[in-house]
Length: 301
Image (tube, rainbow, N blue to C red; front, side, top):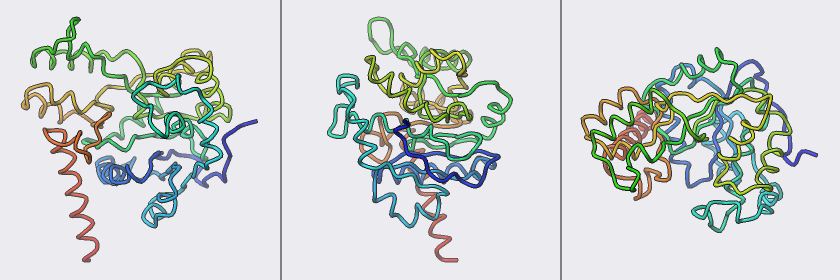
């Protein structure tokens, strides 16, 4: 029996939707991301599905006005995740809510009545249009497209020492031209096969059986072990790790900004002190101010 409850499917059956998973602490990130998606003319028109275990988000009038679907993860459903052995979770996730929260992303594979989902973490800013990503997915036979984890050898030598800035910049360019490695699930686009009712249970089975560092490793293993599912990596420019920009000359970083589609503040939310400062922090703060200005203009009209 499927442990993930089904809900009434959205009426829009022939297109895609944007899917977000967050609690109230990430609401500001969601709002800034949504504002930045205006740079993507077609994607910004898609319905929004929000998944949360946070009643504050569920009862938010702002969220209700934005979302076509708000999927509340009940305590009972969340407790199913809590039965997973804590040893299966990377130590950096060993918090009070771990491992339950770590695996909540499995809920994004629920079928909400759309042909494809675009899932985005909320610590992201859209810098350039990502509409081509949908076009590429439609022209592909992949069941899922995602970005690669940025490997440490981009900025670090075999002894663990930081490389010189020009070398790091060169390595970034090589990685953009030839991405390979492990899946990062911060940005995903996937079709109906990944929304099969048994997908979440298969992911949980993998989580129970083997030691995996995080949920994205489990998703990657599911696809690699499947004879039916196909994964394709898109350009790292569609899921670009923000802190890498801090490792190169500002001139080179600004040059990359003209190409980066989605800037991802992995493990360093820019509204917290750890993610503030430097060029990446400036970019997020600028987007936030633009959002606030537009909101103010609307309220005075």
